[in-house]
Length: 574
Image (cartoon, rainbow, N blue to C red; front, top):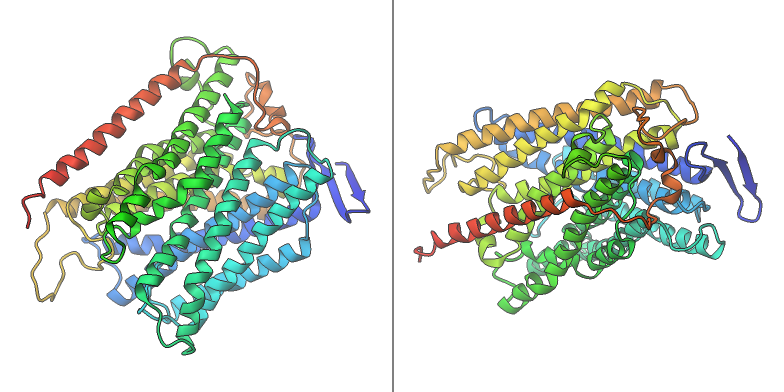
């Protein structure tokens, strides 16, 4: 390992023997700290998920009502915010300081940001477990939590905002110091779009939670519920759009690491990211379509043609990434028929398995259901049922979380500089987690189609003044959800086992290669990261990807039209 010190910048670098990238030691330590925190909150959120699944599974119905809503609050924060954002901050430091061969700007400030995030996340969890914040993820007023709950959310958001600003500063300084040649790598560009969305999101969160914090202290007499709901969803939903942009950037990275893929058309991929920055947040409106407050013009303006420009961005990525994988595979001689490149892909490589499963579950289920739920008329049927959690579990868990898990297996040898242990478990983990999440999502969407409510503790509505009769098939769909959750939890435990055993017991060694399983047919992979996101001039037609794209579009149209047919069956109601 070569170590270089730059006195003017007061930064110490080591040279990675595999990627040849210069690694800022300060950035490396911050990446490790944020990744470890992410895994801790993933474990806690996963425990909450198990308890929730065993409660919604009506045959078991584990938790009493108060603990159900308490755990639901903790699960929402730990999985949708803490786990994801800690990992994304680690990704921002990697995409700026490491991929650009640059020094991290303000490492002391970055440690302050980390401390604020840790303190904030711990405060939120303590208040939840003490029964002082049974307000769920949305925390809608006039539901009131303890002031320390709101303070925890604010501290976490401030820390994350500082990390985002340091990312921008690092990219800018890297350009000024000439740390990289030409345009920045596509992965870094995607993370920059995620950071832009994050800035808007975190400011919106302040506009929601600061008044609620003052109200909880008694310094404000009243917070308008309509205002809070509107501004909250400028935070709550865009927080998942940060995940979307970061996840797609990770997809490009995993495609490069596992098969040496390069973009089919780098400019088009960058344009797709720009569409995210400009239009993706319009999708936030689908959380308010069933509210009586916003007017018709506002609802239609936020869910009509402009929103579909963000969908276009996703469709571009949905073609570009599989197409890039196919071209890389065909370049290696896998040219027979339309799908030899796919049949003989490195399915034994956990990063590749995580990439493919993440794309399928996110695109074919999460993306399609999201666009359909974003249609105002259909939203009236779907929004307050389990179909909505089915949608965002397909995006955030089956999509983002699975992709982040796949990337972790390469960060351990490259950044932690630890030998990856339990490689066989690592190979199986994406499949176990992916299958479990597929069943969980299927059970949720099926239950929602039967009318099962989204948040109610007891679907039998015991002791309710009005009797409710739900289809008997709901017992089956909820059982599918519960069984899927158990399998997914096993997949999560496998991930934690690989990570913890590798980090705490693996010998400290310099990485010797990128992929976990040596693939002698693909020597291009080992030199992939330094050229990550650089387009190649050789043109090979991705015939198989074209066929898969048309199959996806047919599925998309069939699901969309089916929902309109279901809506038509309800028109007789007055």
